[in-house]
Length: 287
Ligand SMILES: [Zn+2]
Image 1: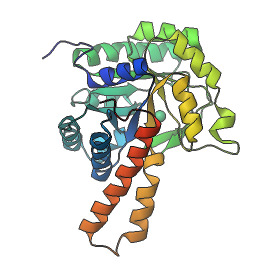
Image 2: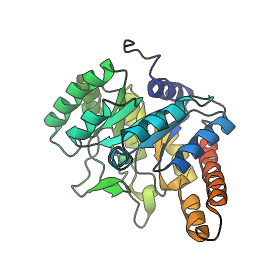
Image 3: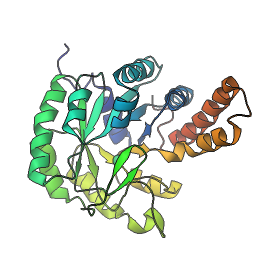
Image 4: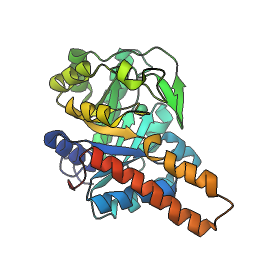
């Protein structure tokens, strides 16, 4: 097995390039083949790097062979596309993930005490690195929930920059998901504009050397996405933002169109949504 190195891990090279180039790469949460096809087609059309993101839900519902299919499909693209497992909360999910060909996984110990979070992360990151898998961690706590992700109703804890730097050093993690007012699964009145402390995000990016990951992006205005990129976000998790037009189309046309036509037109709509985000995040042309 190839030794761990920066160069041969896809997610690391994609995100280090983004960090240096001051753009962001979308990590698109996919639940089905239509989503996977849309990300690959959009990335090839836009000459953009991309990350296909699965939840542990996929490990259990679609199973390990589906994960292998997604990884093969992504790696066969003409541009760099990594496959990432988002929000691994249960130890059994981490164990299963480490038997699969993911480029990277997120170990989410944010609901644990910090000392426990550090211990679980450090131990599993060492194992993941030996397998050539890079690891994202969360420090502080992002609250809320979204499709495929259990709801966290413990209060949010904002990430403290100096503690985050120490956390990254002690665990050996590759990417950090900070908590700065962002929440999963939607924003109330005033939106993300009212809740996000982008000054804190910027300070974290100046304190922590590893690429930062933005969670909780629905809905977020184009202007606020650009501000987050300026404040140091290199990976931006995108879920409903690129999925809603597709879902609306399928809802309106299922049963009216032949399935072949529904699929072709649905994937086309999904692809256009992903392409728009690639242009917005400035990852287009960077592959
Ligand atoms: Zn998340």
